[in-house]
Length: 398
Image (cartoon, rainbow, N blue to C red):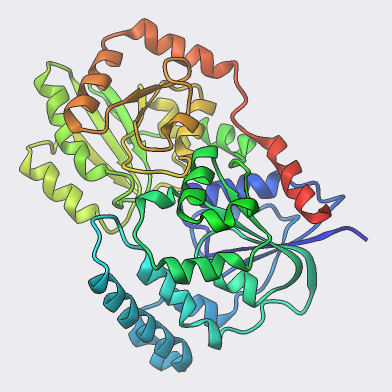
C-alpha cells in the first residue's frame, strides 16, 4: 500500500502560493504516493490546472463559509461559523489595540480560524501518513485531519509581521515539521520562535514548468509599449508587495528621461490606494493596472523587465517564474532577498526606498548588454526545484 498524503489549502486564487501548490502536485509520483487534496473553497482561476491524479475531496460548507460575507451566514444557517468569526474579529481588534505595531497584523486572519475551529467538522475519515497544511493559519489541518505526522508551510517572513505570539506558538507546536520556502524564511521563523527551531527545515517552492511555458506562448495584446520599455509586476495588491509605491518610482524613472510603462497584474485590498496614487502623481499613462489574469506568463514573456518591489517576502514565486522564462529581474532588498536570486548574475537587487529603487531600475534599463546577460544566465539554471519533492517524501518515512 502506498503512503498517503493529505494536502490542505484554502482555494486556488491567482497567487504565488497557489501556483507553487500546482508545482508540488505536478511533481509528486502518484505511482508511489496516494494524495488527497482538500480546499476550503473550490474557487479561483487556477482550479482548472489542478493535477487530476490528486484526489480532490468534496467542499465542506463550514470551511467554505469562512470567505463569504457574514450576513449571508444567517441565510445559510451557519450560525456557529458566524459566531466564531464575530468572536475572532472582536478579539483580534482588542489584541491589536492592546499591542499596536507598525508591522502588518495577521491577528484577524489567525483568529478567524482559531475561533471557528470548534464548529469545524472532520475533513476525512481516513488516517494519513502525512497531513500538510500548505497555507497559514494552520489550525484545521492539525485538529481536523487524522495523520501519523503533520507538516506546516511558512510562505512569509515572520519577522515582518505583527501577531499574537502565544496563539501562534500553540498552533505551530502541534506540527512535527515546519517547512520554510527559503532559508531566510526559515531563519526568520526560528528567530521569532526559537523554541521550535528543531522542527524547522527548508523546502523550496516547486514550479509547474510545463504549465508556465505553455501559457507563456499564448498571445496577448494588453501590453502595448508604443516604443516604451515595459516593466511588469505580478502579485496581490497588499502591503507586502509595495505596489502602492510603484507610481512614485515610475514618476522618478520618467523624470530621469526614460520612456517606460509599468504594468501591474493582480488584485487585492490596496487597489484603491494604488489607483489614487497613480492619479495624484499623473501616472495614468505610465502605470497600468491590468487586474486579475488567469495567465500572467504571456505578459512575463512580453515584458522587457520584471520588477518585484516588495517590502517583505518568504520567497516570491513570481520572481522565479520570470527567471524560468529567462527575463531580466529586479527585486528590492527585502530581508529574504538573498535567497531569491544571485545579485548581479540572474537578477539585480536594488534599495527598498523609492529613489534607490528607481536609480537601480534606470541603470539596468540603460544597459541592454547587462539585461541580455541576465537573461542568458537564467537559461543555464533550473528554477523548477522539482527535486524538493524528495524532502516531502522523506517526511512520510521519518
